Amino acid sequence: MPTRQRCKTHRAPAGWTCTGCQSTLCPVCVAEQGVGTHTTVTACCLCGELARPIRVRRAEVSFASRLPGALTYPLNGSGAIALLAAGVVLWGLGWFGHLGSVISAGLVWAYVFSLTQKTALGSSDIGPPDLTHIFDVFRAAIRGWLTGATLLPAILYFALAHGCGMPSPETPLLEAEAQVQEQLDELHALQEGKLPTAEEEPSEWADAPDENVTPEAPAPERPPSMLATPDARAPERPASTLAEGPFRGIVRALKDPILWILVVLGLLWMPMALLMAATDTSILTVLNPVAAFRCIVQLGGDYLVLIVALVGLGVLQGVIGLLGMLVQAIPFPIVPGVVAAAKGMYVPVVTARVLGLLLYVRGAELGYLPPDDELEPADPSMQPRGTLVRATPVAPPPGDAQRPRAISIEDACVEAPPPGPPPPTPEQRIAAAQERLDAAQQRLTAAADTTSAQSVAAAAAAGDWPRALELYRSAESLDPKALAADVHFQLGKAAAGQRDFALAVRALKAAASVSPQGPVAPAALVIMGRIYGEHLRDETSAQKLWRLVLERYPNTEAARFAQSRVRR
Picture 1 (cartoon, rainbow, N blue to C red):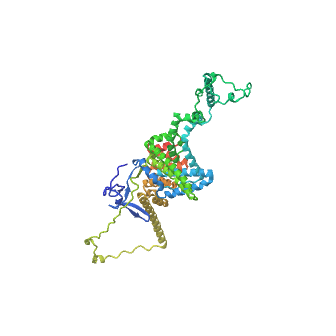
Picture 2 (cartoon, rainbow, N blue to C red):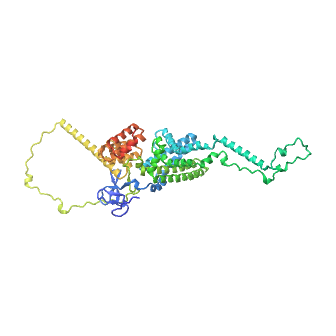
């Protein structure tokens, strides 16, 4: 955990810094102040100036310490309603057979991928995925199922090396060897005189009639040398084991170290493949073990934490599945099936949150987030609880009061003013009125832009991004220079987090144009390239932006990120 700053007044953990008196402030020292009709800002209770949240690097709060909040993520706010709505949809699709199962799987995967991306961008929205076509559902299902291909090398090795437990080319040879061994055992028994007695072995010797003996005559006895006692019988062959049956290949496979190595590597690879599939990475990259294990090495201990978390969630999903079966057994229409389906969505939603948190903390290192996108509020749970005290105006001292002044004779006896110019003609009056009207309209437009810009900036400074985006969206004619480049940049990221990509592109373009040489311009172009390439499916525009970053901002983190995406 990072070292927390303390409030200047109360020595409690601080969450804001005053832009006026530069004091560090706790929730008691800041208050919400209304600006306009619907916008509020956070103000310092000590001096009344604007208070800005204290921001820290995301990596300073570890990935492991964020995981407990993921367990309550589906239960906060509208999460329970979202799970119930998902349960209704999945229960309804269950009536459509195999097609319904495929669509259900696609919807679940699309929901998981959408929540992962939203969490990676810092959003807590648990709303439905942004699907524009039915093929988006099948595409999500295919990407989700392909994550299981990480075990394909182990499966192929097992099939080729051990025959999957089915008859292999060496099976006839093994059977022939067994028959030869059986004949050898019988031959050894004959040579040693160890044969079963007539009472123990019903055979032609005991049952078949002899042509040379009449029925009344007793049967001839065997030579004494050929008789054997019960204790001298031939040794029994061991009962057949799995190793000699149809499962011979499986038993041998369990002793194969190469197979176990491939299985372990596949299981280690699977969470990274799932992470890549959730970020709209190309299928070839998802199935590329070299790229996957390079990312695993970069994540280090956080990846082991991810594996442990996913294993625990898998166990929890099994328990929830058993509970769902018990719920479905309740003799009541519709409701048990809906509840069971809703409960089954809990673990996928938590899994998406866990994957998104890992990208939120370490996404810049993996190349998923821009290098400059690494700050967050020191404590997002802090809310202003102070009261802003307004100063009472003080009346001026009596000595400074205005007194009536007597008019002197010199002031009264002034010379009459000279005659003025002749009155204007009607045409001149109309032209002057038109000029005044144009000037008034220009002042009104400027005032409206200034008011909109101030409202947007105030909402952004207060961290009220939904309100800031609403104001920014309605101010289509707003001059980009009316806002700072950093405000445009933050609005663009917030709009992308809400999947309003048109508004995000508008804000990011403004951020890059207002301050082309500023620190946010390359990061804005990088995010625009990702929006065009990964969400708008406009690879041509994305490639233009990658090359523009390489041309304008060489030897930067943004350029190195663009270099990895540009096509040769």
